[in-house]
Image (tube, rainbow, N blue to C red; front, top):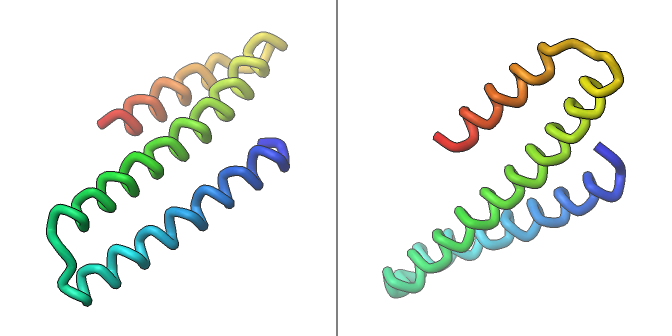
Length: 87
């Protein structure tokens, strides 16, 4: 993964980390359940997006390797990762 892509992912993960801390504070402060669930949904969506970005990057690298004569093992790995990710 290129450095710019890694930096983007790290920035997203730090933002998610802040959101999770916010949820912890909301629970400790006995905030409204609807607001807490909205934040949980936002975190789930954000982490799913990170997973998609990482998967896309990895899939592109594997497909590029396959195009350049690398093993079909890479294709099997992509399928395994995709299956694991969508469960």
